[in-house]
Length: 590
Image (tube, rainbow, N blue to C red):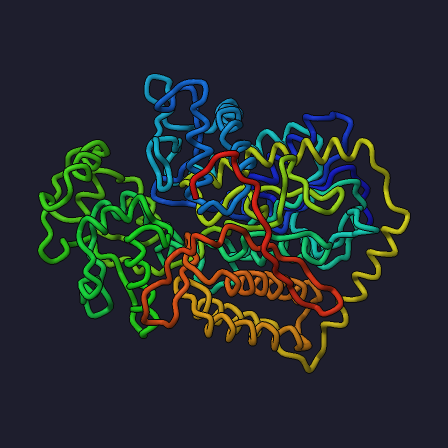
């Protein structure tokens, strides 16, 4: 099957939807196709993500401290929490366009919480001021639903259950893509392509991503000649093992017990206090710059010593009293109280400040009033991705990227809620840029022949006597969890790279070539992450570098001022990493 289009958008989440809408709105005569790996609205991170109170980060006219230059504080926060290893001009674009992005969604009917018509905003990790708008635990889902409803009013073609496997590139310019619709090979000829495939959480065993997030966008971009940046920075947060719920915010501010399967409160060994647990709510993803990272390290070590770890909301940690909390923490708690229940135990406190999270868990079979909640450090968000510039363009002509699969706009970390914002801001920019590009572009006469050669190459990976692909996937995910999660050592990273190299050499046994391509994408993504992590011999953001498993993390190297960029060396079939310098503000103290 062969399709012709002007703009091809790959993905089905918030960034892809906004991109497709923007391309359609930019030039009404432009033909747009969206290729979605699963069923639109039921696959991808935006459609399925939940947390205790999911945030959309925006600087609005009503946002404190106010004034026409209010967005500059937002840009500064993005750059500084990013560890100064992002492109500052992209941070400015996010901040400047955040209000417009919010009001677009608001007009579409996303039910943001308001008081007297004014959006309610709260402070999140990495923010100097309260900017987080929300609808509740399902803010992302509400955004996805509103965008789909708007898309249904357009003539954008949506190809569902379609896995795009590679880009068609001719002389450094993209001219479409190939893939599978069900089991059928398809070719999509396009004048421009937007990559909006999300992150690669499925590369890890413990993650909060929906199934199928195999790093397709990163791998396709690399094979096409595009650069990736900041791939070592992956946000990791304590999450429910059974439901994937991020146990952040109010769940930590309720101050539950951290226990293993024996009921032992192991955090005492690490001298973690009650204020540290409370503060973990606003410093949820592990970060080398915050002392609460010791909680993530403790949980990770406990699990890798063979234990299970739980949050117990049924009774207080040993020796806890609400009066022992810092005065500013007690004040913050009081501001969050929705209904006075009486703070006799962590469950009561959570019911006072966030009853929605209790109901959400109970609806999924987890009753924290009587049962412990199993948790683990889970891969939550890829900070890096396909390197973009101000118009969401990459170094490959006609290729644009947006959302989690794009990189450069965020560094080591990001303010809580900036991911949903990023999808909308650069989703719009990428769609408009792709539409503009398509207007002045023609199809490649070689596209069909290039596509056929790509399909033919997939057969070289298959063998009836090869390694079963499901076993290979399991092996990769386990080694990534063990060697490149919360604790990263040079020895562990090299061990993981050796295993990736071994798996790359294997012929694979699978029912379809599509399954093998998905695994090859996972391998290429893992290689980019591991090699970038090996180059960063310091701790910065979620990249915690250790000399050995039981040591303390190495400090930040203030002399390391660059970010690491990955490209694919086709001749040697390997990812190559080099340091480059980010775009910096004119005046910044590093």
